[in-house]
Length: 419
Image (cartoon, rainbow, N blue to C red; front, side, top):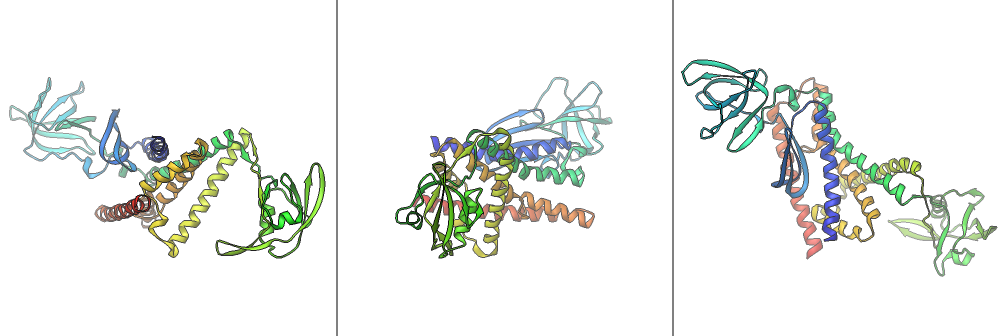
């Protein structure tokens, strides 16, 4: 149960914030958002508020914000089609009923001759007296068919009707909000746990190591190495790693007194590189300062972003294997393990995953946010958008490839963790 709750918290929060970015900027651009979904596949839960349906779906593989303007949104009334409708106080059509068996109070009927339900918003047809008549359609008109209600989206409220800048910002906002979420998490961690000071304090000395031989003790504070001042432990560690086999002079503070020790780092192989080691561990100390936790949040997010990009570059340049990727099953297993170390560790894990999701979505691959941004760049350079049929084909192929990759990664995860 703990694992499931941890996974729902991590996955749900990351996906929710990603889609929230799309949602907020779509609304700010005047775009009608038809659905805000967490997950894919069959609907588990749904509630309508205003013009948007909010849903939770079965498959935990992402989420989406469905904006007006897709072909599936279009309401087409063919000549000869008999419809029912009601009028508002301005004699505009405010409800279209395409199910001929449906009856509403004050409902009128019309045999459609022509209709324009995108830009000009009108319907023309023959009434029950066989008179040709035209009605204007209200901008908030509801279309009801087979029990499903859909609000007509005037062209100016569709995604494609917006300026290039608004469309690009609406798409970029998803990954942007993932980075913002990571910053928020790291700020909270810094405020609650404290900010690591990285003070050069020795927490332990390995037995029979060069450090023990040289006389280092637990609690020593390293102040200088080869007459160079040491501020943080990482500075000292870097010097040690670069001087394997060379004697070094180290000044430490012990019980308020300064002592000078000489140590020669031994050579060791780490990640296929030869480095120097002396056999000490440093103590993690933390400083609680709410103001400092804000820049700490930005620094940690940037640090993770750089690390993930480096790993991604390695994968792209020839180090790709399925084992390097994780799907929902792999994330679930990793989250279950991380959750055992407490909520702060779980939050740090969620922040790192959020950065990862933001970066992956910015890749210029069809069906990802980065793929759509690449098409916007093409539109900016070319002066006009790519043909919709070609864009649709590219997106479909990209989505199919992503689904195949996701299935392969998920199956690989299942084999790794359960067989």
